[in-house]
Image 1: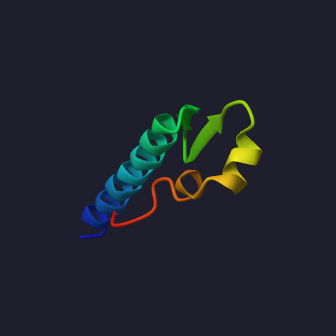
Image 2: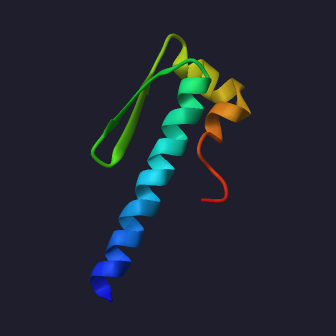
Length: 63
């Protein structure tokens, strides 16, 4: 039972990382998943982060 729950948690995390990466890629950023982190880079990223709600909300929602 415990192994099954751990597997479900890992699958959910992987879906979340993929959703975040896809949303950031759609926003035109360079994205890489490194372990438990989703890394994004791009010109003016900090300014865009504060200016664009869609960028801040990337990957949030019904997962």
